[in-house]
Image 1 (cartoon, one colour):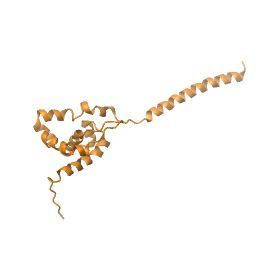
Image 2 (cartoon, rainbow, N blue to C red):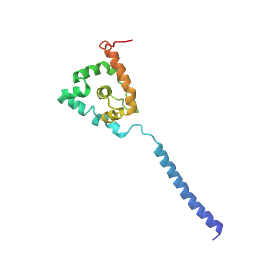
Image 3 (spheres, helix red, strand yellow):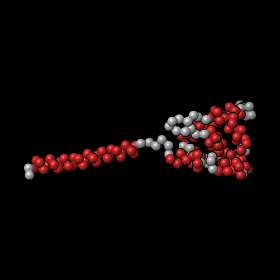
Image 4 (cartoon, rainbow, N blue to C red):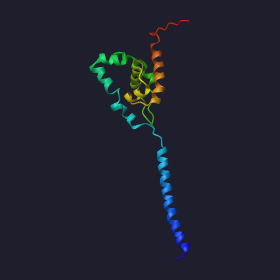
Length: 157
């Protein structure tokens, strides 16, 4: 066999192998670079989150413990939720469902009552930290707007 023919055959074989391995490597890189829109454990908020679990149990079974946890009674919570839900509830989109006003208020009141970090609140309520950092100020503003007639602040100079 001619030496050129042998080299050409070897070159073709190895170039096919190299090209296919490069294509696989590029596909793997593109898969690795894909960002997660939402982490899977956050999506189970409606079935496993703090709002659906322990807080609902406490509100119905142990209102004293609910009050120590949230610093308000379940009735007071429902009153506040009714007052501010139209201010803090966002619309669902095709891409994702909005965080319910109930969870936003529960998380914010829990933050005020306990001083827990956004990270721990994220785990308890199954809401991302960036979302928490965006809606906590909104909920606080809504609370102030609805309760400003009840809030007395003395200004000292």
